[in-house]
Length: 320
Image (tube, rainbow, N blue to C red):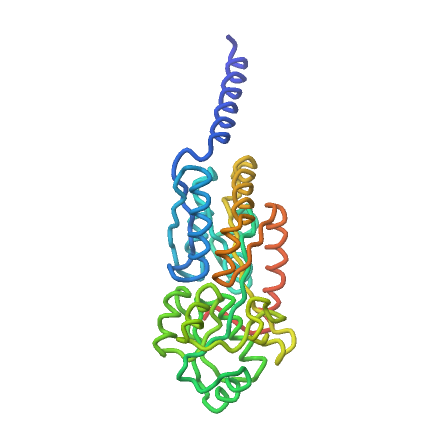
């Protein structure tokens, strides 16, 4: 047998093995990196989709929390992982839309290093105050903040939609408020409930339960219009036209992951998000499922990067 013929046979065998491996995917547990600690929206939705994928594939999809640097740490882990479908990323508006504009240098490229699987869901942020703050409307909070310069607000990290919502709030109403960043919504919410910070723009998945329990007071939502699920809460845009700072999550894989694996994951995610139980779950935590094709998610992320680059510039937000 000639060397050329042997090479052809080896390449054919390799291709057949790769195809068989893709057809059988996954054959072992899959790791889903959540870039925030437990207790926030990113982690909550990650665990819900991981459970559905586990049930669909018959292999464990394990959520691995890797918080820090507004998602940079977790993103780098996935960007540097083998593109075999066994390490995935729970992407967020911060990691995939805001960070490129906020940080002068990050150790990966959102376009070159990642491949979108699907958008998972969207949620609004809710302006909430500790009950000790004597404000029960947006206007009352603005008045109180003006008479109490240095009032603190917390976020789930520098450059998050919660941080930028506060920066926009500060700019829109001419306030002297102080940003206190945390490593995630969970830790931030703990301090907010304890009265260590005055208010926050927490995402609905994390703070709505505390509003219902009357441990926090909700004043408004950060979407352009009122939310059908929260009709009594005004949009802050009613007081400051154009005010918007919503959140979203998506499933992402390393860029060189094969189309077969991406398609498999996308199919399972779309089926899960279209199911009645997942729709009920997402609604219960103040989110809306938003399944897409991989191409549509990549296009959505590109548009979001353009939008948030403008917001970062106009708000003056920076990575302190």
